[in-house]
Image 1 (spheres, rainbow, N blue to C red):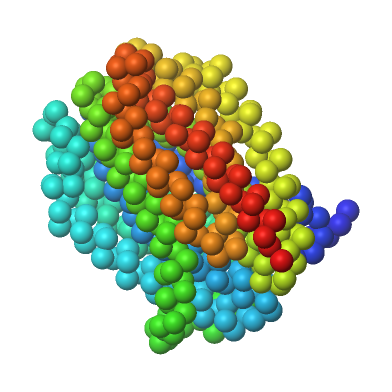
Image 2: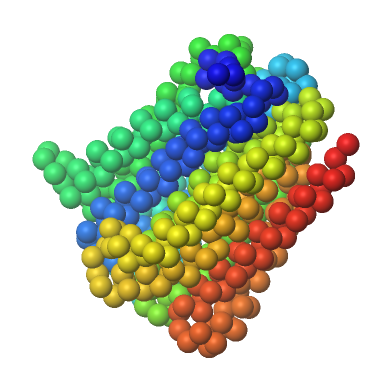
Length: 451
């Protein structure tokens, strides 16, 4: 068997592309599922309280989504620049980009966390929730998780930087530790089991922040003993303004799209809430279930980013082309499987998370409609990762922003056409299909220009 491992790092410049992509992507997919599982387990336990509690957590998590978008600026920029520097063989430059990415992350996440804490009432009021107790619960939950934004951002950026080196296994192991802690703490703090007080929705937030903090501590210890990307690491060392600018320049387009996507989802919630708080629960739970598809694709996107960045930096353009071809076939198989699962098992899957018949029926409709677009979502995300690895982050962000933003006017077309809330789901699905098709064609054209 061909050897492609170097400790936990995979050699992305030589050997089998399929093996390299698979073994790099698999732990990242695991890490993505871990991140999804934090919210999913919170929702599953909180769902036992009622759909109002689910709505409170889901509403506050909209801003968690935005915080991840903010963290993408140093995460994507750092991963691309460090990866290309590694491909060039310049480890000194790669180490500087790693340090500067973390410095930039801390500044951005502390600032955004303070905004969410100070203006939590206004931020939750945006959704016009019908029940005031639900709104108050969402405010408290938002304040709690906002305290953890810096450590969550640190974990997010570390995953990108380690992936740039070809090491995705370490991040997965550390994130898995956090998930296990969260799974244990959720029921204890939500329902007040044993000596723990019953904190309800607040308990879910405390469990998440505590678990993420433990993961951040483990990552910090990794930095202290690493002799590769973080050798002689000094967080307080002076940054190079030009290099910080490169990181921010590359990371800002995908980050702005992620933030804009969160806002578009929030506006979508304004349309959905017309049909009642139960409809919001359908949207939030359905989105989390659907995220199985796009989070797995994210795993391949991170792997594609690193493979493309290292080989682009090394001038191995044939491996850049072959890597995209291989990754696309792997995602095609996965996308078709997820489509079948969501369409065939819609109602049973949704009933895992909540036991209210009205919500389950609406959720089954959501999953069947969303299932149609899963293959194209896979294409969109993996193609975006490939574009990012080339350092061309603007085009996929612009295409995605335009097509996703078109959902809002399309709501006015499909809601009366279909008759009811399912028109919103159809608008979302159709734009996802268009988006994936355009980006796939655009990258194929980019590959023809690559010399």
